[in-house]
Image (cartoon, rainbow, N blue to C red; front, top):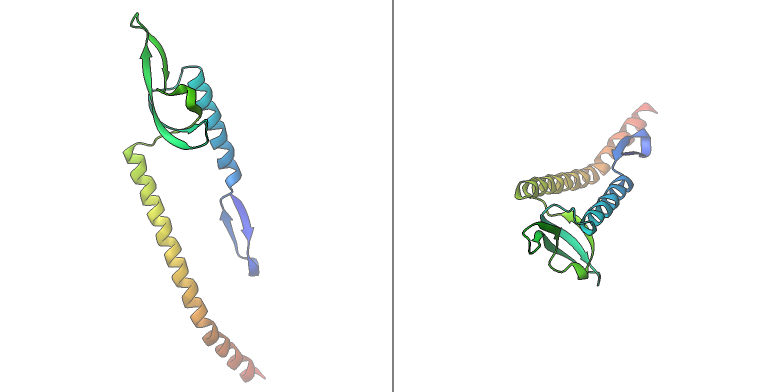
Length: 136
């Protein structure tokens, strides 16, 4: 978290993207490496195709003629450039959805408060002007 200083000495913590971007990049590299080595766990993954688009693919188990596990990979291995992330479960999806809704609610509340402060600015200025005049 980075600390951001505002006017009049007010400070708050703001998330920095660098750490998350680095973590995500390492995660992508690790998943791609695991896929190329045939160690990827079966499941649905977001992938980047060689032509640049992003899609979802299922990494399944591939067995040899002898019945032994040959590898774990995608149907179209040759067109996949990078494994980006495991597709989240429904429970995780619902939690992310709730977090987004809470964030949108907080943004709406902040917008309303900013509008109210703007409406009150003239009133507050008049009150302070009256106080200054009475002190003189």
